[in-house]
Length: 260
Image 1 (tube, rainbow, N blue to C red):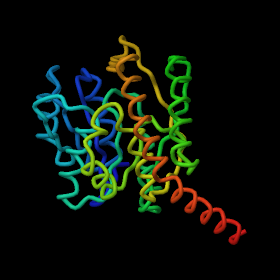
Image 2 (tube, rainbow, N blue to C red):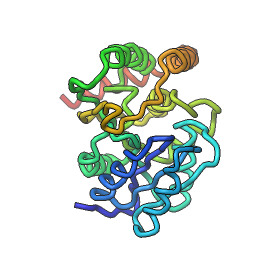
Image 3 (spheres, helix red, strand yellow):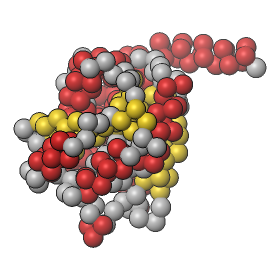
């Protein structure tokens, strides 16, 4: 089923994904309209291939950045254009085939029913998942939950999620960070700080082999240094916000107690 929406779009940032991106886009398009791809300075020829696909598909839009700027920068460019076109929410997913396009309608329906919230995918790993990646993300998740006083972030790194565009744009335009691999975890922490409630839904993740067309740009040392610096500045922000976060947390707990 291909669902059309004037408020919710699928946004796919893409950097040198190889031919697998075409299948990813086709799978997304069978389930949603519109789908936008932001080509982030790719040099593998996929920009031209995607533009050719879009010629015969009114539901597919391709935005091309001439230089690689990072995932966060690609998402920001996409949501800026989307906001100008009247869209209010964007489901972000990777271009490399790891994320489950089959769940796009379910995530969008949850977002439509809870428009002030962000809908976060919580990865369900299979045997293809590298153990280092599975266990390493627990550290980032622990920091993210501490930085938000356990407001309910199921997973801070999984990029299959629906964002309300307005709050995300405001957060990103107010600072120069969140432009590369640090985008996903910093976005959810700062959105929580701004009062955007997380809703968690399970979603399988598939780590494709090279023979299956899988491409990974993850660099263990570079990207973990980036995450370390990100959590350092988030902890500084957390300390400054701690009294207000504690008060909000106490009010939320009191409200739950009253409702019970």
